[in-house]
Image (tube, rainbow, N blue to C red):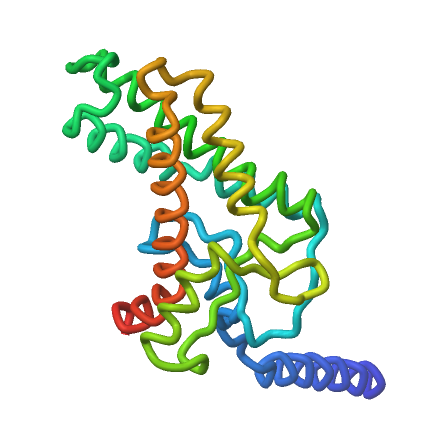
Length: 231
């Protein structure tokens, strides 16, 4: 009997020690948002930002498959369908491509054309040509450490002309211009004849490049604004 009580006492001590050890386990801390995740958060909470990166981080090249994957995600992210709808509405108000007519039928044609412009332009300039030219399609954000507002704004707007190659060196952004040019040429297949002139094609290219430049501006300053809003 004394031996049984001794064994029972040892068992109780072991259980108590185990419970105490569980009690002093460190409490898990909530995961913090990394710099990479911050630079890839949706712009204005909805617009895709899969190509966001930090300019101050050590440069790491990405593969052609990764470039095409980024382009696919960027092109098929759901807000693009609303963006195309907004452009179609603007074109309807301006009566661009008069042969489309007005009303819902005209809007539907303009919507299809605008959506084709967005999908084809994004995929070519962000995936196909960066893979072919060995250029990096990511936007490398300067952030507050990169200087004041005007320096960062000028840097963001200039990225449609300057980009990095797969070695990390800055070079002419041939992917942007080749992608936009090729997308404009392809658009002549589905646009009517009155929209295939040289002037119209230059206008479409200018709008695409201008839109990309403005998007870079949003990418540069959105994390700053987001921190202020969430604070």
